[in-house]
Every structure is written in structure tokens, then in C-alpha cells.
Length: 203
Image (cartoon, rainbow, N blue to C red; front, side, top):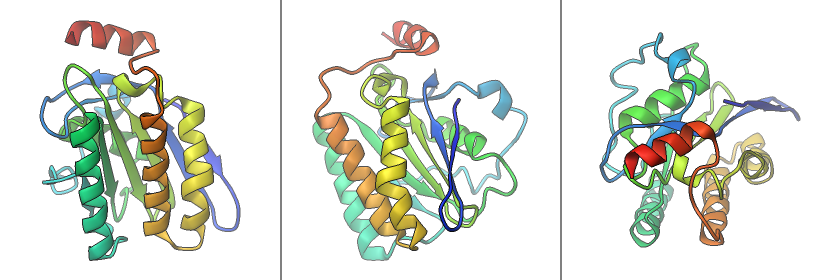
């Protein structure tokens, strides 16, 4: 798992969750998660924090106006239906002292984002009060959403609006950039050894 920091004005820490490795649930949000499994297992999240949402948007930090959340929900549902790629956006009011890598991993695993066989899922996690964000990438999306691509989307599309307090704008811009990248992808699949093994076992 790789992380990076971005500084300008007040600091935002962008943890880039790539590559992903652990296959879990098969369901509408379903998918795989990241390779820090052992590191995250010794920390147990609060039950309400991990409660599975009914759709692709979970705004527990209350950073999205109701109308914006509804529009984003509809966009992500429609995109999943037409593409088979699941993008989930989540915000949390606090990381409660836990590394965002672990929170993202637990969330990805518990919710099961992507399909069991394709593993084509993404989690965009924002912790506004901790000034941290993370993109968790499913095994089946390693090729189109590389580390460099995720880093560029965070730095160029999300961080600038976030710095000015425009969380809806930053999230929407980041989601649009992810969708555009996936729509232009020529191939999907895994690149890391761990994910290649998982994809083989899931086939």
C-alpha cells in the first residue's frame, strides 16, 4: 500500500490505495480490497462505522447537500448499471485515530465493492475533519487506475476544491475523472502478483 502527502495552505493527506488484493463479497456493491490485510486486522472498527449503505453514497460526515448526494447517487447507480464498474463514495466524520488505510480497507471488505469475478470496484473515502482522503482500487481495475492515475486525480481534481471547502465539487470532479478514465480504458484486469492470483482463483 502506498501513500503520499499534499501540502498547500492547510494540509491534505492523500493516501492512494493501490493495488488492491483481497477478494470478498459478491453483491451489488461487491468486490476486492487492499493488500494491507494483516496490518488492518488488529484494529476493529466501530459497528456503526462499518454499516453497509443501501447505495453507492455514504455521507456520514454530512459534507454533501441532500440534492447533490441524490444526484451523485443516481450518477453512480447509472454508471454501475451500464459499465459493470462499481464506484462508491464515502465520508466519515472521524478516523478516530486509525490510519485511513485501515479504515478504507475495512470499509472496502465489509461492503464488498465490485463483482466477485471481475473485481471492478473503487472506493473514494474522504475524512474531512482529519483532512485525509483515499482511493481504494479493486483488483480488476489495476490496469486503468494505476498509482499514477489515482495520484493525478486526487491532486488535480479533488484537492484544489477541498482546500477551499468545496467538498461536493471536489468529489464530483474526482468521480467524473475516474469515470472518464474507465470509459477510455482499452483493457481491465490485475497487474500485481497478489491480484493476478486472486483473479485466477475467482475465475
